[in-house]
Image 1 (tube, rainbow, N blue to C red):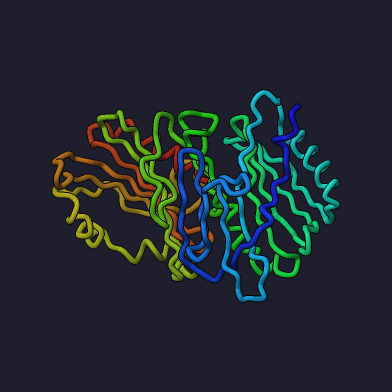
Image 2 (cartoon, rainbow, N blue to C red):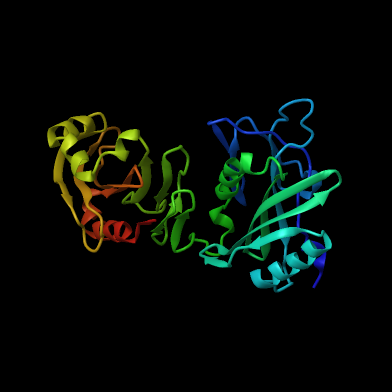
Length: 336
């Protein structure tokens, strides 16, 4: 095996600190990653990285800036799984005289294998600590690494963790060309089934977790999953929430989008095997601008102080076939 690709990349160079609440997202054909707006981003290939995200130095006496870097290693033809990769990494860490090494168990996901490492080592005058997320997929190793001085590591660990967890392979590069069987969001600790033949048509927006559509389908089938983290959901149950909106109020709110509105379901329920109490709505109307009659199902429930909304829609003439798919989506939704 050619070990030149198996390198523990440490991006040992300067970076800044985070207090910002506004985040940016970098997306290309292979991956996406988010970072605070007051951290700099460099995708020029510096030091062999595919992304180098660094914080500002706090003062003239601050010589090392915390950073997160991404290295992508080509493993084609080397027949390396995560166990072999971790074994090689351990060997390299011993050559660095690394200490306090902690390696998480290997996890198997729809997109590939994953593990996490933490260790300390000395580089020049700096005593450094790193936290590294390793993903092996598509004959490549994706190493996302947060590095800081031992003294400041925990100070910026929360931000570093968020950046590491935001890294995600683009669907086009995952093992299945129709995405995986399940969508997984690490930040929200949720999974939901992916319907076959559907594509990611828009995952933008701070509160949109996914928006999937079948672009070749003349029935305009699509589904989305959103959340709302308003403070009130820390105190409110779904029963309280369902009492806040009347059917008349809901109908009036739809009139900006639809004509000839009909409400078919408007109630709290436990659809099929879903274990949570759900606010369940189904309505139809003639879409203003297209004159297509559309039917929409909405499932809402509160978990971890957030309101989650699963929305399914298609042309009304096809609804009797699509509705069961929507119930299957709901039943597949798992949030820890």
